[in-house]
Length: 359
Image (cartoon, rainbow, N blue to C red; front, side, top):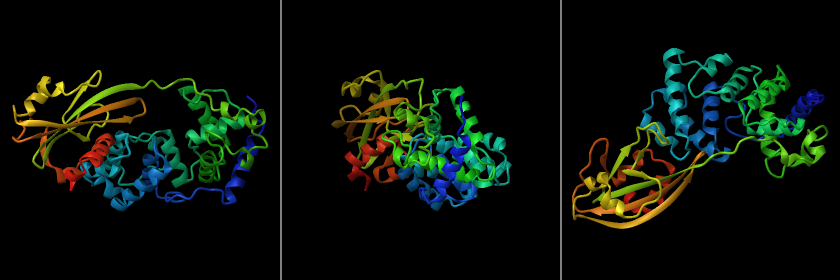
């Protein structure tokens, strides 16, 4: 592979960044490894605009690592609500507590030790190492992959283990040992603002003199991806049963999506079912007192996850007798629902359909 213009890549990129071509964000330029780590975990699979709000809320609620480690899981999940990918939140809390317990509340200054912490992968470890400790480790996200693939016209697929190692090695060869943090920020900013996935602004790109994809007019062909995501469709049915101002919820404990969050009693089927579910399913029949309930409405919602599409159907039922609930189900007042963390699909349902019951 011809990497003739490696030196020019780094020089031009840093020159561009020094001319104030940078995105302003609250976590940029800070040296505190806790806040760098917090920002990077929040920004995984999250748009910067959305992530900024959550970052600011977390910093306000838990300004230090010790504050986060001491927090109740329910409170942390509630603050995370709406971001999705709840394993990130679970790992965040686990690692905060592990750092306080086994590391004296101090982040390791070694890349390999950072990588050993739960929920910290190569990207996050490199971000902490470079931004907090000035260590020469390249952060390689989607923006970086796109910039490198286009500049060098690389046909190596970015979505394979071998491809990720290849691009990481190349990025580490390009990073200047004396300015790793600036380099990492510059290449991410370039990918986010100039070398965008669609309609890249090549005319304003500082690298266009040597960018092979630009000169070959093949920008849209890079980066190369080998695989396609397989989307699994799932069909959830929720019983939203109200007894006066109280309703039934339960905590998801299964090793599945949304583990640790709360939901209404739920039945999963191979396809969406109708109101016959209320009469036929033993679990729901046990909850609803015979002859004392009425179906008030059915509402549908969808939520797209990375590899799953959730179809949800909500059955809104009112009963004049207290439901026969079994552990781990609990009966709570509607005005208390805001104290529990729910998946986004349920939050949206509550806001749109059940708002009066939340007051």
